[in-house]
Image (cartoon, rainbow, N blue to C red; front, top):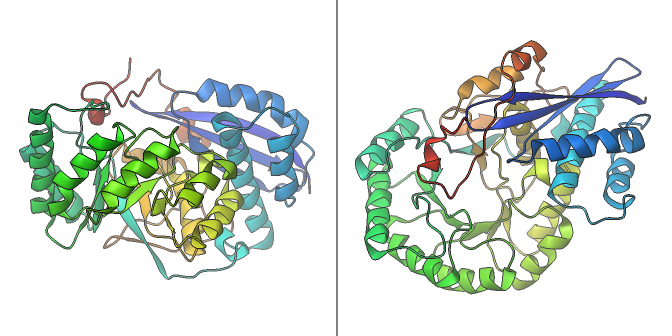
Length: 386
């Protein structure tokens, strides 16, 4: 079997563009990959226009290790977000092809299921005014939909430091969310790499009474010594630290593991070279007793890929999911992903990823001109089309 063609296509919404790749073969089997590329869609498409004829066309989709290694090493320049995203698009599509060719769901090709259902947490639900009352009402809608965990960033456009009045406001919003969801629902606090270590630690101490399930990306991702400093102080409050969505290669995680600067890693499969790379990373993390909770701001194909990884990964914790609250219509681009019921996904059905690409739907929702800026006022409303 040989790959004969790749076709990129973009589905647009008011705050994100989803990049899909269809990979065709000479045996009539096609596969699909997808990534949400944050503000760098053209860069990924540009790289693919060079890489596809060089590495992908004519390759055997069963030879995933060979294909990924060539894309990683043979351009000589260091691989980062763009290359690892483009690689993941192709790699995920290859797994879809292999599963279809063998008549098996992907997770069975990666070791088989180690769980019967997959816990989910909701994101994208707090597109409301940044007040305790509005966050309370929005959080109630999440638990009413059956979720048992939800994540949110209550920090506005904050960066490095916050005024005391703003810190008090944040505490009041987290208190409101905890009141709305009750004591048995996980609340996960997203910091988006906003703060210096001392501010991150202070905020964690302020929020500790509300029992967050984790504090995510407390400091910017470039300085792991600063993360270690923040992590040590946050851990003293009893709150786990999660991070990793902006780390794109194995080598970036080496120092994090050696420092033991986090409790939960959050690689994004679609920015980390695909399923097999992420499966390897999870196994490595397990030797440090770390859990994995993959980042996922994508649509249905990204979510399907994440569920296959979750099904077969022993140290998996919980799966992020946007598409019940943020432009849920994107699920129609590739139907087949299980719905969240009572807080859990069922295992995905095969063969392959278990989804069917709807090219007409994608064409009917063209790419939008958006710049999603997490440091702008009211970014959380996700209403940013130009």
